[in-house]
Length: 254
Ligand SMILES: [Zn+2]
Figure (cartoon, protein in one colour):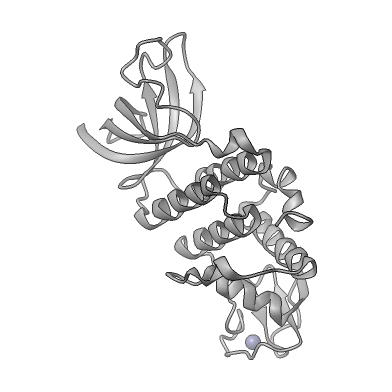
């Protein structure tokens, strides 16, 4: 058992006893962890109310080697998530970031790059960046970093490069674009505009801030949302809980 330090985002807090909580944290250096926070519910605990949903904190914990919960020994608050108190859509978007991190990552699988992306998404929600694009950027970055990005430049089945033009075929099960040769026998194939694929490419591109300048018309926004929602549902085997609350993102939200 070793004592470790890391930055962490609080993904979930469950009351465990009168005085303790079990927390799920997404750490910068160790990926997702589950930890027991003894005494966290006492008024004067060593966690100083740092264990708030979506708060960013500096933690110290005892890393258990087995399947047992880690033991949180210290949590110092760096930043509370305040965007949610101003605007319900920002609150739900924050919850959704936490949901994707919880559901799509494995315990103890480090992804510092994904930590950075989540931190940036939460900061964007704080700073007033439009909710829809912030969420889409985080979804596509998460898919890319975890190796689940759909094929957006070539055919998902044969790998052939594809020119973006007119309407294209997107195989939800195949995992991306499909060329005319490969569409036969594929299930859940949708027709999407080339412009929609271009938007997805742009939002998925690493180290490229140009997604911040993209203005989406309602039709493209609807098509992008429909495609990614369907894709994530297939990947997770269920509909993300927060999608119900984020429905507005496909419609009028900026
Ligand atoms: Zn093909």
